Length: 71
Length: 213
Image (cartoon, rainbow over all chains, first blue to last red; front, side):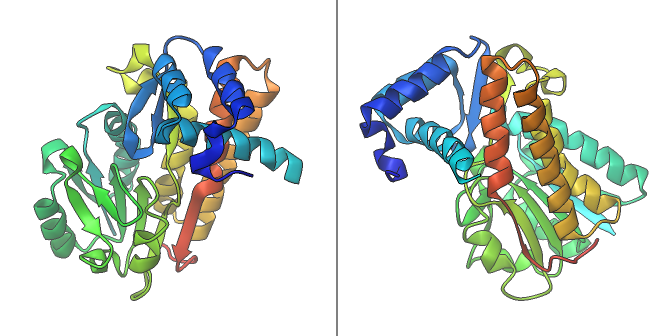
């Protein structure tokens, strides 16, 4: 698995995470640690930009999927 | 027995943690514990250091933004930091609802003294509803995150040991994400399940696992 920093360089992962976020309701806010709280659309922008927050959301998604593989 | 709790509330994440912590304070008071509530502008390093030394609480709950090495208070002023004043957490149980401090601050704080540190070794994440920002306690999406987190302090106040309290909290995270997956899961539920699972996975209990307050 790619390191957290690299995750969104993978086009398929970026598309997957963006698709997941895009179906959330518009009133969704996600608090990501010390980085603050973000709306759905802000998170999509961060995933597209491949920044730390975007990569954290991608990391959560990929580790979640990985956990099913391990079980 | 006594409880010291920090409740900065300078932005949405800390506002939520602060509001939901009222349930911990109420239970502690109902149980006759002395509660020192460092809320808002009282969540400063000066107040924290002075009060913890004077009161010598058996349980410390720290809400706030953090890093691997430190936990902040109001406006992110650092209250406790590894290698600086982590000795203040010795001989007590600490629960930190703060990101990543289970990586370095937690291990450092339990190196000496009969200490226990429960926290997270990565980001603590949660979902909320924009429409509830001014009334966090009515936010049904935040509820499973806050209740599972609060359950650590609640279990400790009810007399459970530290490891058991953490285990019970993790079970609440697990039950909540499984409920979200098994109900006719919509996109919001599926996302919330992932975040609950993440917090469960990254919660750590360090030091004396059998400690009780």
